[in-house]
Image (cartoon, rainbow over the protein chains, first blue to last red):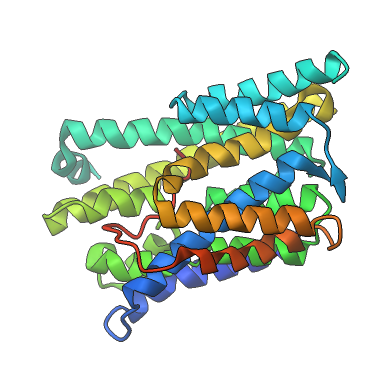
Length: 101
Length: 234
């Protein structure tokens, strides 16, 4: 991550935020476009979850990492608090690695 | 300020406080994970102050941590944050009509403040809860990030503590509520498969962007009451 990248992301994000209040009397986004925008966000996040938990570089990451993430995911699905989800995932992966998985 | 608290009443205030408390924890995870992935402590701090959109921050740091280019990270973050445009169209005059209100209010326009404001029928209450939530989330998230970044510095090697698993697990927790919608789920699964299959052949960061092809699986328009993508900063 570079400072320039942070600034570009910040400027673009602020642009999206400010555009709504400024343009609301002039443009009207079709519901279909709004739905696609919110679905696109979810698609990106899920793809990142998949690649970050299954791959390291261009290869398979080994079993400890995806199993830890899956345990965290299970906790999230059971509506455990956020911090429990994160700690469970990390502890599981660390324990599996320690055990040589 | 006093009048804002009075307008809100104890129930809304309690809800806002609960969401803000969650943001402290979530921000701390972001700070710690960022530093553990190799960033200097001030990078997640500056990022949180300037970008102030948790999902995209996790996303950008995650892409760079996995070897992706900053350009891919920025692009993915921007696609993620494009949802703020319809947010701004939807919440109407909640920000007020004067310039200062719009300029500052736009920065605290996040999933939570929009979600709280959009369900209020009374415009005065909508405005009060938008500002109360937006301002307390800004403080809570950034305080959390600073704390987490300092803790992360003390931790050292992320792989030894399984911190590389903490990051995708955090994202998964954020995105899970949005997956209840069947069309969204189809698109997300197809996108994830595309990203995984292309990972061995493409530069890091690009497969995640390629996942957007999964949107073709959305099919017919689905019904949504709120333009809320996901409950970040929970």
